[in-house]
Amino acid sequence: MIEPEKRYIEKSKNYFIGEDGNVYRKNDQDFNIINGWINKTRSGRYRRAWIFYLDGTSNQMYHHMLVAIYFCGGDKRDEGLLVLHGVEGNLENKKENIKWGTAYENQVEDRKRDGNYYNRGKRKEAVDDLPF
Image 1 (cartoon, rainbow, N blue to C red):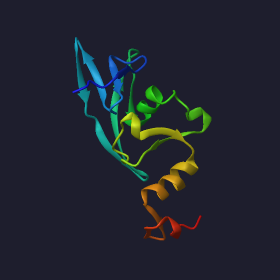
Image 2: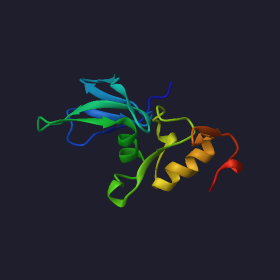
Image 3: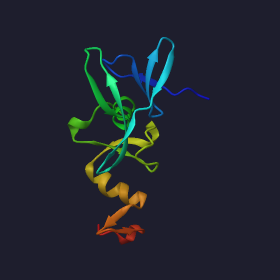
Image 4: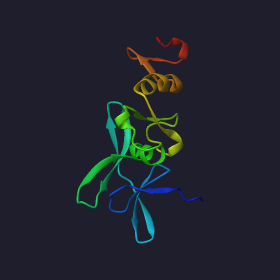
């Protein structure tokens, strides 16, 4: 089994994000997976974990946000971009399933691709049925 690449989460107490979407904490020589929890929001279910920092603060971070920042070109939230999941869904946070994109891509193009567009409670199975 190939060990996933891990990158240090800046200013944290030995926390790392892996290209596989897992958060790790390094103790001596070993990396331990931090399981965190699944947070349900209006827009879906997302995996979160507590990250503790050297200055004594802590923050709840989404796994997909950490993957995007550390494996997909840095933090692009100031540019108005969102973190988008690919066809494998919101709980699959490996770097191949994560990218930065626009709100339009997230709300329209992803839903067309995934076939999960709803209009007034009725699922639209075919892309041709979409009103745009």
